[in-house]
Length: 217
Image (tube, rainbow, N blue to C red; front, side, top):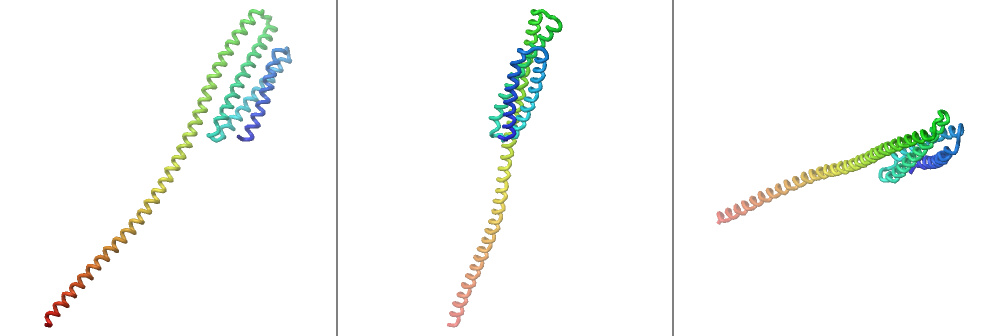
């Protein structure tokens, strides 16, 4: 794992701890103090998302054989981020209800009804967000599987290329051996022909010698 990833991970841990603490404080504050706290949390959430993007880029650079563990860690970080955003949305809804009640003088029952409606919409948005997150994760995993397949195909191609080179080398050696054997066979045939001719000459000489021997008597 790269030092950059470790640094991003540490910064992310510190930042999410601060965000969690500030979200818990929002319902206890009022007025401008509460408004400023909401603004600060929004900024910190954006910073946390940027850190997650940087960590995700670092994970993509990790070799495929050891990437799964870090991908699981990224999934838990993303789940944690989704929970923080949901908690912050609830705090903001409560904050918005309080401000609207102060400005418009809404009665308690109307505020509670609107709050329940907003919470219901928030839950729907969270479910949609989780589905989108699941789809994104499937796309990332599919991309990783595709990269692994491409790496395997590349290795197989190299093996086939090496086997082809060995076959060419073997074919060349067989060609040389065939030429050597052909030359040896030619020399053997020539030697046998020479032996036959010498044998005929010797037999013919013996016959002539016998013939002239009898003719002298």
